[in-house]
Length: 355
Image (cartoon, rainbow, N blue to C red; front, side, top):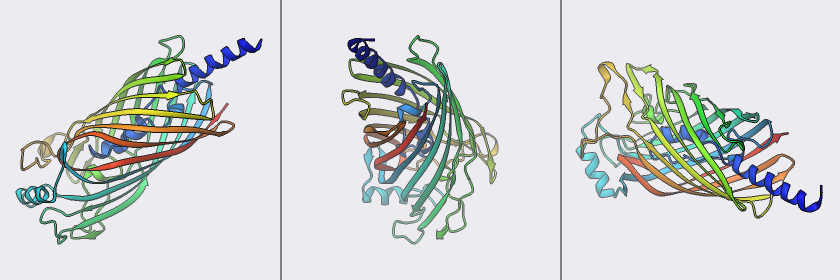
């Protein structure tokens, strides 16, 4: 093989690697996005380990995400202190609370296996979540409560099939999320001590969810791109304290681009992340419709639409090992009722491919 042919072959393989690495998935991040509409972590964390690989075999990934929800939003705007006082005064006791903060730290261990046209990815998250709320009476702190808990979150297993095109750049994805995370966290300090934290703030959702979607990918010169869509729907729920709580359906669209001009050692990346989550609700029976509505509008108190801009990069540090990181910045947030949102989210991790 001559030098020119070898160079062309290398460029072709590199281009294919870019396309294949970007094909899948937003699954690892959707768990936090489902915890509340404004959590924001909808990122496709590492395109190289999400179900598509240029070589058959295993890839291990360890990712850390940080989400600090400290900004009060109502609809598409920031809620002022005067609005918060008005909002709380309009809500009767046992109605909606005014939350102070929610900080979620998640470490996700993933193991991916790929063949030529199919793959399986298993993800095990460890979640630490701290939460504080002013309650439903005033903003002066007399009803303030806080909680902090950690543990294994909801495990998910996803698969993909890419046999629809000769270069494996189009395919379908399907998965299941299992109710392995705790749903029994109580407030451990303040006026609400020993009472249950809201279901949407528990480490686990208590539901078994199906995830379905598809993707397309391509390459232009040294640029690779992808576009993908998924829907997550709870098919079974746990009845806890007489309440059959059902998380709202989540619709996610992700698009991304990356540049290979710097070679295999350093790859800049850029994503645009969209998620729409329908309101949560009790499922059926006597508790159906029991979620308190927004007292100001009469509408739902959970759910919303979020759009994030996420620059990032991947650096190969030797052999099959790479590190990566993303900074996710909100460009549009429209939440139902009053919800906390992050000013940014941070994700970084390390992966290793066994070839």
